[in-house]
Image 1 (cartoon, rainbow, N blue to C red):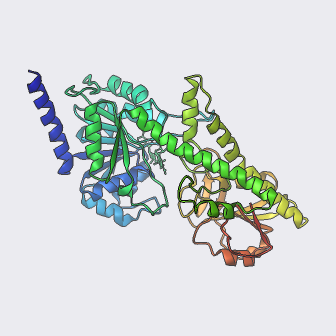
Image 2 (cartoon, rainbow, N blue to C red):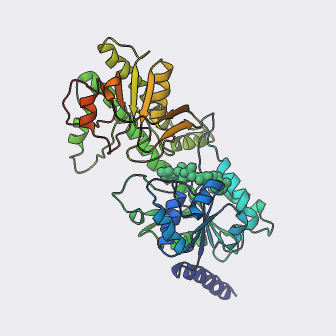
Image 3 (cartoon, protein in one colour):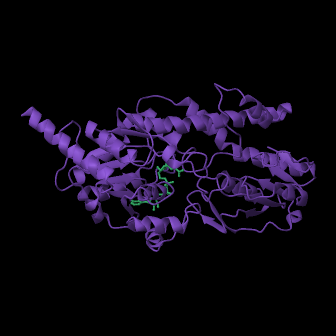
Length: 452
Ligand SMILES: NC(=O)c1ccc[n+]([C@@H]2O[C@H](COP(=O)([O-])OP(=O)(O)OC[C@H]3O[C@@H](n4cnc5c(N)ncnc54)[C@H](O)[C@@H]3O)[C@@H](O)[C@H]2O)c1
């Protein structure tokens, strides 16, 4: 009897895996943003038929028209994916037709700096009524350990009319659920996406096996871990590691400045050590959807265990203070020229949170501009990726891009994002004063440059 059950389970699993190997498995990806859209293209590139789900009608429309709204993704790539069957929809009823569903929706912080899981819970509630047995549901959104088990699974089980349960043991029928963190690094082309190992933790052995098989079809290496919580924590460790190390160099930069030492020269020397050191670079503060946010998912969860994550809090404190430090340096530099911030014309170079990308979420540039304006500066910006900037959850700027001519009219030019398209030599030559927060003017000798 037991043997018969094992054989049935094995053949059911083998059937699903075969569907993945033969690319017959239908893949649904929810959230066609910076993470979900590239992932959809990766699966399409491997000849899977992918459906992209998004609540934003303009994104669905753009994708179905063969267009792209992310600079580094060309419309030609969307058209190519369409040949493999890619299309977008806002209709959750199509979830029924999917063999695997991957959730890539935002996980921001709310106004009290606590996890805002409303996008995840909203998505899970929308897919629950359309589940079918043996479907594989994977959460990729970055979140605190426990989210998959404590939030996703109960909502899936409560919300489906068939009364389906999550499969937790070999041979147990039901829906398969796993967590697999995204390791996208926008703008970094040094590692091909399929060469980035994919960590996977399933709620049961079948979920782990199926998720590993699915990702194994597009990633060269899959790293299975024992549970979704381990996979969730892995992503947070990676991001907290970055956050803490960036805070460390940001703090050391400030000390080095007082000591007359160039922190960048120090880092360049330290990174010649072939072991035990990884270089991180100081800057004007953290940006993006990950590093400034994700660590606080863990500190929030830690409270449930009566535990204080002091490294995270200290790193947050240091990194959050960096835009204020930049403003102090601009004020000091103007002061040297007998000017005040109030009434000065200041050009901020770069809005994106990092070099060569079209993403300004949590960008320190936004804070720098707001702080300069608060102090009475007349602020303009230039960023080739943003013709205009309106308002977001944490800013209200309403500005348009200023061309890079007549730089001499500005009392100060502040380099906040070191886009490679900028000609830094020319910028220094034409400006009265350059405050460089990124070491973008490295190698250029001029008394007009203030490094900070
Ligand atoms: N951007 C990155 O570099 C990066 C890297 C690693 C991990 N992550 C994580 O991946 C997740 C997604 O980030 P992102 O940068 O792609 O976000 P994003 O804002 O670019 O994209 C999210 C998309 O989800 C859509 N959406 C929101 N609610 C929805 C719903 N209920 N149903 C369908 N679609 C919905 C939005 O319209 C948007 O298009 C986050 O948890 C983030 O922390 C992001």
